[in-house]
Image (tube, rainbow, N blue to C red; front, side, top):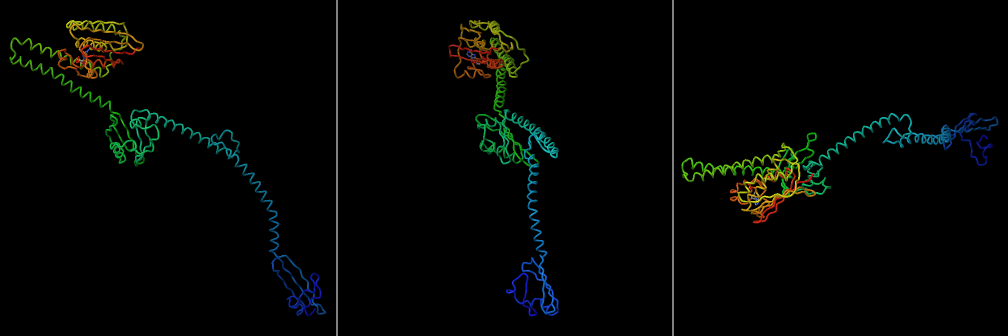
Length: 482
Ligand code: ADP
């Protein structure tokens, strides 16, 4: 009505409604006959449009209409969108999953060792597999080559007689070969990674390593367990930096020993040659100066003659020995019957034997070996010659040749003066004589048994010596049967 009280509402209960006169659309209608207003709901999701007009009787009629707001419309649309999107997303996930699986699975199941065989894959992967197969092939070949090289290197290193040790630049062992392990009496494993000082505490070894670490090559002699080693160290450069050290150990024990023997031999030769020469010069000088009495001339010239003969024997023996030393093998190998050869030697020595009335006999059987006749003849000659020389008047010598399962044995047994036990080892040395003065009378040079030893070695024969002082000696040569 004109006061704003609500007389009728088609939706709400009129009783509970407040006075509407202050509502803008009602206010305007009452005053101007027409009013409009828009009301926003609290939740922003609705807008209500009002329009009111004043009727002729002074009452106001108002109509209203409610619309959803844009916000609400969008909100509602999103909800629908979401409802549509959800299954779409789920569908996409399922399809994507399936597709990914289809792509990944052949990749996961790829046999990378053999990209070409047993691989059920799509075409797009073929170039990759092709490449892979090629690469695999190349790698395999390179690996085999490297392995071969490594094996080759290892075999060489392991089997050389020289000791080889490779250290890093702090002195720790990177590699050590069998010979080096044997030199330092180490076990066959667990040596790499140890410091060089763990092998041996000798100053020389450490110095060799240190010098190489400083970039110098170094050489020294290392003595260990009665053996001598030539130790050589050198640095290993990789791109101008010293990354490691190589130590080489050469066993020079035998070489040194040979050098010593050679030096000793040369000294002995000079001495041995000088002795008879001095006598010869001495006696001939006496004669030249007319200081030898007429009646002594024969005696003195006999001495000169004997010394000269001794000198010649010496020179002969020395030449023979040095030939044997050089392992003179240009002399032909022949089938030689030792029994026959010994017989010939006995014949040659017959005059010597008769001088002392020594009975030389031969027993046994004929036995053929392959050897150098000249050397064997000298060997047998020297043994039988000694058996006569160092025998007593009316003594005897027996030469025996026989075969056993493995050997052909030539033995020479005499009833002579025998060899003192302490000399048995040494009589085979050059110039060694048991009784120098006595030997001189017998015309010995001290080289006879050296020739025997060398000749036996040349023929791979073993020498055995049995002797008892004042009873006699027996020398056996054991040749190997073919
Ligand atoms: P030598 O020329 O002096 O005979 P050898 O080398 O033949 O030199 O012999 C070395 C030494 O061994 C001899 O000087 C001798 O003292 C001793 N000897 C060798 N053979 C016999 C033997 N059958 N009986 C006794 N002593 C021997």
